[in-house]
Image (cartoon, rainbow, N blue to C red; front, side):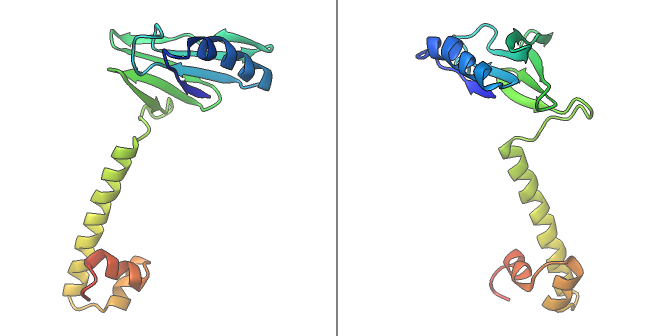
Length: 148
C-alpha cells in the first residue's frame, strides 16, 4: 500500500490508517510526502512482522536519494531529487513513468509509420503490408492516414 500523505491529516495518516492496514494484514505500507514538509524522511515504510508493523530501513545513496524495498512488490521505491520512482532490483532499471511510456510508444509508432509508408511506396498493397506486419488493414490505414 502506498499512501500520499497530507499535512492536513496527520493523525489519520500516522495513526488511524496504519492500524487499519495492520488489522487487514497489509504486509507493506509506505508513505510519501510530496510537500515535503510533513514527513521526515519524506518516504517511509513499515512491514508487517508477527502482526506488528516494523519500520523498513531506508537506504541513503546520496543527500537527495533514498530508497526502501517492498517485499510485496519485489521493487525498490526510490526517492530521487524529490521524485518517487520504482526500480527493479534484478535489472537495476527504473519502471517507466506514464510520460516515458507514452514517449516510447509515440516513437515506436512513428518508426512503424515510416516503415509502412516505405512498403506501400515500394508497390506493396495495403493488404500485403497488413499481413506482413501482422496488422489489420484498418490499423495500417490509421498509421499512414485516412487518405488511402
